[in-house]
Length: 276
Image (cartoon, rainbow, N blue to C red; front, side, top):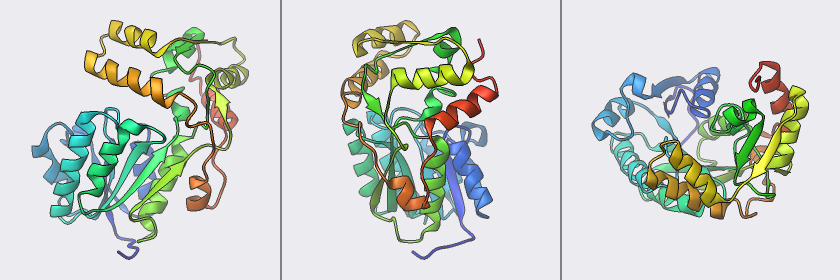
């Protein structure tokens, strides 16, 4: 597959944290974006909606709305990848999780599709603190989370999007490869909260809790039992220190350093993200 500059790229999750940035990056690169969201009639849970999104496209960015390590994600990614290939969409880039063993079956389902695949294995998102499930606790002044004192190389989702677009534009260079991406330094969750506190000028606390206790909290919020069990399993394994090292995927693909957490915190604080 040679580099094309007239590609049509299907972007699943085009209104989400990574998908919205990938869509903007694809458009900025002069390619055609085809958003695949429920607003456009695409539903990961409804196979009858897939062909309309895929037909006539050249490539697709795949991000499943549930945890990439779930059985539902494995099944859906595998089936969609096979359908994409059958419709002539061979170039597929999957967002996966760095160090998450539960995600490997989903990655394997993509590989088995005969697609020209690339897997981007990302560290914990910086934007989980600003756009994801942790933001409300920070607005109230306390983050309660089962991160313990483990160090994580938090990555800015803008860097993930930039990597995805660069991979799509690079022809065959990253086909059949996994690209491991992280931020530039290791921080504990407590240190990350401290940097957010510094950026906001507020007093913020971090309270670590066991994964099982956090799961009980999620269940109390109405999260389905099956999803709670998967998340508890992921937290018990993924947050055990296995990701406490840096990778050079951003540097290799983009030729620059990844964005730092302090930069992210300052920008998010400036627009009032964590205002009480």
